Amino acid sequence: MKTYLIVLATLAFGRAAVGQKVALVSLEDRRSIGTSYFGNRCELELKTTGDEVRKYKYVKIKSLSRAVDSEGVDLLTDKKEKADYAEIGDEKLKIELKNPMRKATAIKEISGTLDLYNPTEANGAIVKVTNFQAKPNLNLLPKKAPLSIAFFTKESVEKLAKQEKAEREAKMKQLDPATRELAAGLMALVDGFGAGMAGENELSFYVDGDFSKLVDIKVEDETGKEIRRSGRFISGDRMHSYSFDEKPTPKWKLKILIETPASVKSVPFSLKEVELP
Image 1 (cartoon, one colour):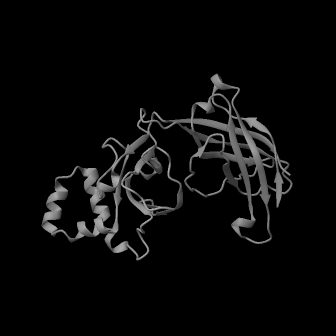
Image 2 (cartoon, helix red, strand yellow):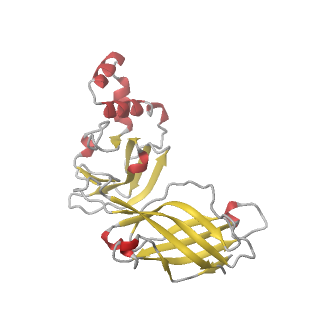
């Protein structure tokens, strides 16, 4: 495995922001005689710099449109994993490519799109919810949000399931469409609980709608200090469980981060003539 460090390459934000830069922190060209993915790949790490970037708090690589080596070989993979946002200043944005040709001397071009994200309550990207543990099985987000999120416990879902069918259906008809779909999804969870689910140091949430718009679910204490998570488990995009080193208290509140049109700016980037080791 070879590792190569380089300093700066141009980040194209358009004509009005020529001076923006993206730093290529490292490049690893891993090769193996085997067929393992982990033994055969080219991995780059980037970080962003510049005045435009500093207007935002988070960044992620939204998509790659082109990656080609100096021999003209396409390096784009079929991998389509969702990228997580990283906090600007501490970010290491990873790009995974196919191995360049052995006789290639450089990656001629890597082009794509970055998403810059600045969540605030004013632009609708931060939603704070107090006393959420007293509101199980209900949508905690505004109706205009692109998705819905419900806090649930094993007991709250089982209680919903034990209601008489006619009573349950009548109550569900009174709900708005988003909440009704949420309740139906929660019902489907009843048979999915294992003995180890929903432990006393865990909080669980059911997500429905446009999953791609959910950035994170954070928890704060009564002073606004973020509670550190000790673990996270996501099942099929819908069920999100978070574990903590302490038992949740009723004073904890949620800080839900979602993408809204006013909170995200998409910008193109392009790296050219990146020398290979």
